[in-house]
Image 1 (spheres, rainbow, N blue to C red):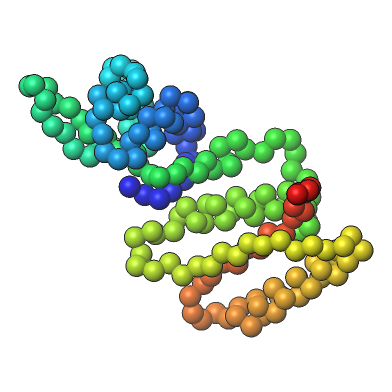
Image 2 (tube, rainbow, N blue to C red):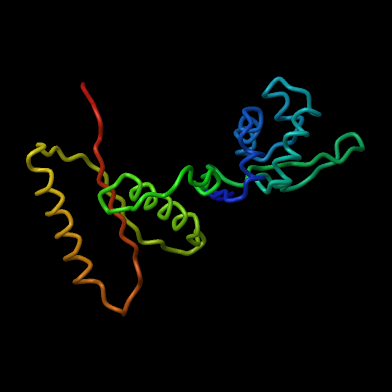
Length: 185
């Protein structure tokens, strides 16, 4: 079972985005038969099998083994991943794309889509995937916003300049800075 399955095909999204199938997928986090899942969900095995078959057809579930029960072969199924990411490309752009600048929210959304696709494409079987994630909150008075953004840009530009050579392992650096919104506590 993979940690994340990145869905780029509309057929996969259509198969996944049904409440009953999401419940079936949750039950298939561990290998189970349709009869076992049906008992847990208080459904008929036939109804569960219908959903499992659609999930198998969409490559979201796999049959991991089978067993004979009273002369009948029963499949044992497991979800293909622990979590599923839908490609923003499945929805596509609505309306005309405006001129993007590096301070627009549209640019930030495009960047997050790119990061999502890059992470999904990583080889998770590699012995070591060196990475770092940092998250925090900074409070900046409105009159110092531009100063803060200029400092952030200069700091990042310095890193790109110092480590931007042609030799060594390539790392992608994506920084997202956006208004947090109201958080009155």
